[in-house]
Image (cartoon, rainbow, N blue to C red; front, top):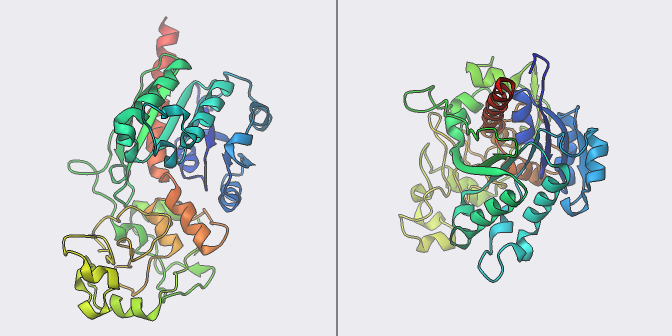
Length: 378
């Protein structure tokens, strides 16, 4: 495995390409991505010039398409990655199990595994997969991989332990058919390791915005401070997608009362939304939350809606911009998100954080190198 060796990847359900970006940082060559979300596909194509984007639902994706896009035959692909959307696991029981229509996306993913016969598989998903059907969903997934000759293991990875400025838990299933060890990445950040990347580390250099403001291309507010900003900025001198959603007057009135680290509990009772006037003070802990500069972000969702989470800027009276959400996911600023503002937030929130993907990529390469060394020794 010489200097120029770059293992190959196909990314299914690729979205804007967060996992793809991370694997590329770890020295993988991503050959193709597939998704049915057109705006995400446009972002993917702009951000991964070496990869072919294949649009459309996975049901329409054939081995012929993939072989044409990658130039590879069955068994030659190093890694097939992808996270079938989680509704696939919403109903699992003895009667339905893998035959439930909502497991169809996972079965399509397995079909592609069977047709391409990659050496390694990587599957990312929400932690709810552990509880789906009392654990039957996860067992069914492992059983199906085993039938195709893959040994797989799952582990919950915390994004913040890999340099992502956000509390985010994801299940990552890694497996292979080549007898290589299954290695999940070791944390790099946290107690006794590098300090967590804070919200200030992540977005402190971005220009000030007013509520609802969209200025298009903007200059950075300062020189990059710290490794994270240097990494995500690269050689860019301007920033895009730094546009804030427009909040109505009643929400702007509420924001006035919320200090950093505060939440809906700081809003005067008469200004609370009707439903929250009945809420227990122990409920909805993140609602109308204002971020703190020295903290981690809550999980970035497909809508950075202040009604549902801590998406208020630490200092400015507004919700976080698309670019700020992308930074909290560890996307490089070179990613320019296509589509409507709503589409852009969806692409950011659905993604695997690139730095988490990079950590997974390094673990895969470690396993590949061990397997190659053992093969040589044999």
